Length: 167
View: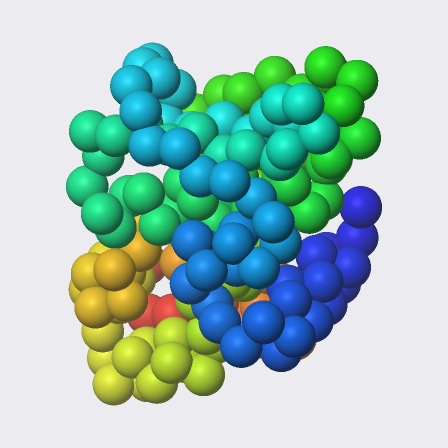
């Protein structure tokens, strides 16, 4: 699946539904959300009796729930065929070993992080970690977004050792 496809899909969904909020997007897509205990998982997406359903670990902080919901929205939009065939295995949200998990993380990064707001914070000199705190997202998600933006011609150093993002 191409990175442009994921970005364009997210932007179309944001435009069509007027929101970047993962719970609102799930609702607009007809996806039921259930917060319950599903440890050790943080979230999961299933289709139960033809009803797309996202399960979110109830003990997570609210900001974590948004990230998990955005990730699971990504599975719902990008990988419904894997859910229907039972071939989608759930891992940690930021487990990058499986392509479908990475694609869902890219989806969540584009959904939750507006690039103009991100660039504004970075130009003001905030670090990735500070920017993540201000945007109420995980620093890994910011790093994914910056990596995606590098594909558009930006030149961010996405190694964790750098304090200088603009080169």
